[in-house]
Amino acid sequence: MVENTIQIESAELLPNLFGCYDENIKLLQKQYHVLIVARGSDLKITGEPENVYYAAQAIKTILAIAERGELINEQNLRYVFSLVREGREESIHTLAEDGICITMSGKIVKPKTLGQKAYVDAMRKNTIVLGVGPAGTGKTYLAVAMAVKAFRAHEINRIILTRPAVEAGEKLGFLPGDLQNKVDPYLRPLYDALFDMLGAENFAKQQERGSIEVAPLAYMRGRTLDDSYIILDEAQNTTPEQMKMFLTRLGNNSKIVITGDITQIDLPDPHKSGLIEAVRVLNHIEDIAVCRFSETDVVRHRLVQDIIRAYEKYNEERKKKKSHGEGKVSYYK
Image 1 (cartoon, rainbow, N blue to C red):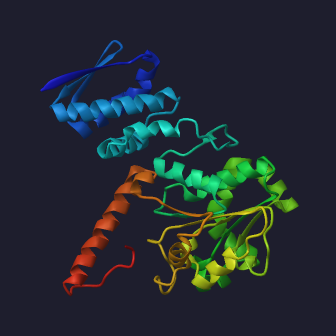
Image 2: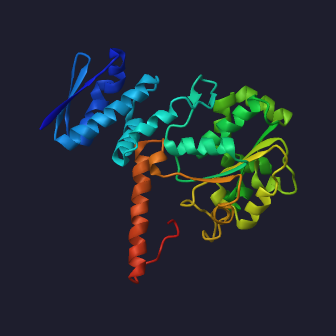
Image 3: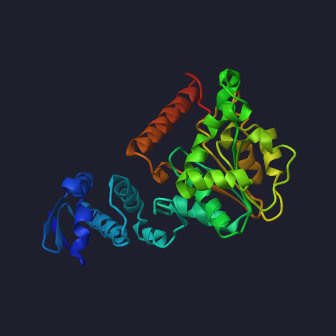
């Protein structure tokens, strides 16, 4: 057993570090099998040498996050654990000053993981960006934030958000209203992100002026989109023909961001996804970036990460069974 002492420069950080009812410290102790005790402005960590070392690295990283004024919770604790496990804890400092825009509630939108930062950097540097990864990684939300930032800075004149309405299938005809009313439920996530950034009243005003457009993918055919920030969401549900059609809408002074999760394809033939084909075809073209997210980039409830890992393990097991002549292989992996 060894002991390591970390001196906390500001006692004001301790409540944030410990969390409500010491839940953060309890999680740290459980993760690294150590005992952590506060003595004034010092934290004493006791346990096996390797465990104490990793716990100390995690605490120093968490303190760096707390010093930026961020709330320490289970989500960013688990992300720190993953960074420490990979020996990348120092890279957390690169997230410090990377705010994108401010929401109507006064919250600063910024990347929370290194994967998200790479995605935001790619959107800054490239004309077309493909963000591919599991649910909850902030692909759509960050893309909308970047679009709002460009719109507010008058870098572009329009924000266009679109997605295929594949999920509706034949049930579209049973929904009330015209085509726009029928597809609106499938565009809801895009509306929600814009409401958060602009407020419902301002969004409605800009939509009425034509500065913001939220429409199904079918509305894009035959158009040339100049001076626009264009986001295609749920792109895994496009066909190769639809994806090519969409990409060729790009006009002057415009950017395109394409997001999707290839493990959630709703097409009749999941192998014929426009997103999968686009990643293969466009991967090495200059000014086009492909960003891949993993479960460590998930910023929703911790169970989302656990669910993604469980499905990945399940699909790997199905692959192994298939290679031995048992069952069917999953197209997810």
